[in-house]
Image (cartoon, rainbow, N blue to C red):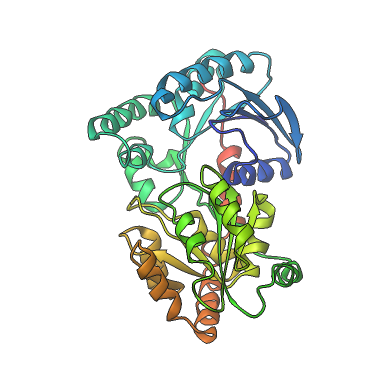
Length: 371
């Protein structure tokens, strides 16, 4: 089957999209990603590990212009799709769903909607309540046109089961392939100089409300503690500048999805501190910790992530503040860190990408042409 995935970021690559696309390709499908190059700085078209990537505009003008910019993206992407051959559509997140519905109607192919999160709840943090409610109203409307829905956890399945029949919903978590190259992780640990320290790692979006500036500020203030940060985003310059003057802060820049788990396993603890709250969310770093066999430091903000970490003894929780975080780190010792890592390893059968891949392939094997 030829699959056209729709994505509202430039795919550098996007980790979840990459895993799904690679799984489909490895089982005989063809995948093209039609992506929005918001920065206007990336190649128009390229092949990335068997995935054809086509990028279109426009260049984004900031949050205030998002609605008009995303509509322009839909227009450009719709035009770009006209010359492509595909048997199925796969819309990643709500901001590509209206585009997917429009292309589906025109090309009469089945449409999969991949809800990376409950979009209306995610934006409720930054917009007035009536805007979030209107977005949910729109999503409910477009869901009537969708053939299958992918959600990331059971809580989200319950949310969508009120809007679409349960038999059309598949739970495909943000699980990761389990660490297979332990030697690579040991080599990275040595190269990064983490062998004689308590090392904390964060790999992800370098954006506000994710504790990345606080992590950079923490580096060098706790003896025997090193901080490793990787990723890209608006806080990148700050992190990079701090790393040049602090020997206990290591900046990795963008980390390829295939390298996230080896780097995570090279450190001692994975940091997942988020100021915003989405109660039904299991953050991706939980799955990093399971795959890498490492404990976590998590903001105890009422989210599902913190609940799971406490339930399984897979880490420590604290308030979203530098003082609380510092106290949590200061309470750790080698034996406790090792035990938390072992507890996360025990969850691999339940939270592995192997299990999620089977669900994805089953979904596609049952996908038929739309009327």
